[in-house]
Length: 256
Image: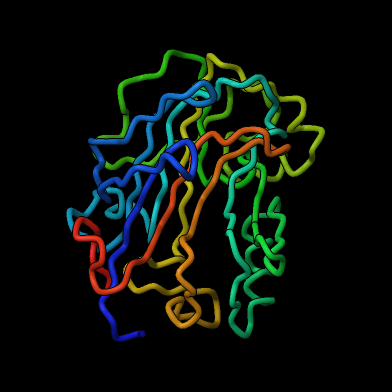
């Protein structure tokens, strides 16, 4: 299977049943989502894919999910989670426990349940996002058309911390701090979720000390990122990565 040709299909939407395919690395052409729960834009960037994004000229990441939008449901920062969910049990490689320890070090808010019938890994959105800016203003015209990354800025939340992602993550590990932040419908949340470890082009996960060929353990399930409420009553948006074999989707991007 590792020598087969695969295609990667990326879809975005407010629910699993309403996912729409998007093109990768469309810096100036984000998809717009407008529901009663969320209003905003999403762009997905992958390194070494056709139509390369200028984002990777200045960032060492292998992928970046960029979201700009407003959460329209009354809640606090403790109520919104972001992470992965799967519909069936996973086949996990040897050494997974090491990877899990690294993941919880990289994202200290991460809660893992990967051995259940419906595996999942979620973290408070305000903790897990690599870069976050929150401003009270109207939803702007897409501001990252040249492949820029989000610049960290949570100063309008009134926090007595350094205006850095490291300080924000450390501060919001405390649930009481998250509960104290009201998510306002007039706030625009600009977010980058990214890392240099997951390579969609090579289908590998590279962590310090070892590299895993994801195709060896792939059982056909998509990799689904979900922003949802903590009580599972609302889904704000979904970004799904799905491999197909031998170019089954003619509009997908090929993976060697």
